[in-house]
Length: 144
Image (cartoon, rainbow, N blue to C red):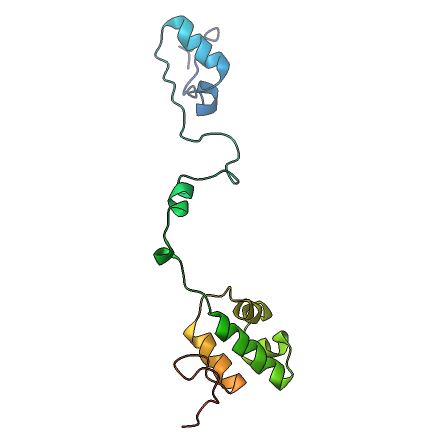
């Protein structure tokens, strides 16, 4: 301890600058003045809010043929569901609760926007008591 010089200050473990400090305008200018290497890269689609912009796949979607589109419920099935529901005096919501689905599902099936799901079609057939698939659409559901 007697050898310690009180006029000297020694810093142990000086912290290196943070990444944000290295990217600051001041640090870049200092590096350019001293002749150091400065690498600049632009990120692809960097900056800005891209939520509502058109994507690269938009043109690909436009070029799609009808073969690639999903099949929706046919118009005759839509009418059969609507007629069967109205014959029983049910609203869309009542039918939906009977088959444990949301009212929106029934609405989509009746408007022809839904992609046919065989489980939902089976539930609808049982509740309405009529066939919605196959050759004998609209006929009463046969008991086994």
